[in-house]
Image (tube, rainbow, N blue to C red; front, side):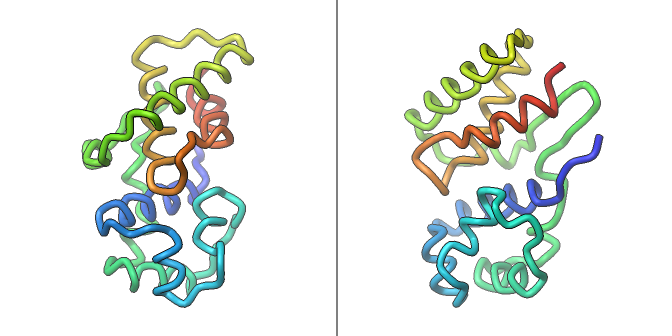
Length: 152
């Protein structure tokens, strides 16, 4: 199953931001990147971030480039998605979980899909993890992508 490498970068930047307790705006300002550069990466609007941008982000987050491009965060198999236990360390935001659940349910209903409870929860968890730290709302574009990629 082919996965866009930008999803790995997005998830890894979010994880590092969470670990460092840093906002996206802080990262952009401290790294000297132009306004919204990191936001555009995190929301999939920047399809091919340059190595220089990734280097600056890694330097500011005190991690390696490999930490940002590593694809082990989202473990994907032919049968579906399984989450990395490290992502379970993301702090709780009840409203974001509810928003993620609503977004996933809405998309499932629109597509007339009825996944198993386990797969639905995994989709909600992926949307929650992806959206945490960058927005107060669940990312519906990412939710659509997860559902289209991993549910029959």
